[in-house]
Image (cartoon, rainbow, N blue to C red; front, side, top):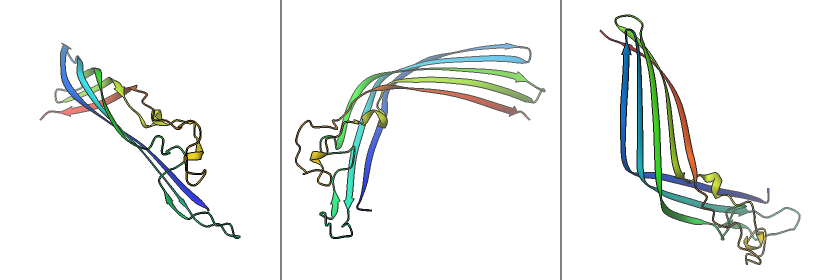
Length: 173
């Protein structure tokens, strides 16, 4: 193989803020229902890292490219490589619903549903610019940029949605 190319697109989202909520419970003989609603407001520190390397080896048959390891991949080029950080205002609402049933005097079963939405997160897939100008690559081009500086750094925020289901048994003795 004449070359091996690696691209790394990495993100980190850290939330800093406050949260308020309320819980409502209802019991009727053996059946119970519990609702919990919360909302968090604050900042999300978003850190993105883009790295790339290409290792080139000499080809058999007399063709001798410059062997070595270079600081660019296929989608990670000099035009977008690096680490960037920003902070965005975020809202995180969540809702938990739990239904319980007292099976016996000592055994209780529950089933629950959880929902959470986190606005303004950055994801690795949103960092990828599919437009590539290979002239800036020391392996695939001359190493000197000719034309547009792409791939360009992307900063497309998106939301994160999580759902969960829980089942439980509680034994009291």
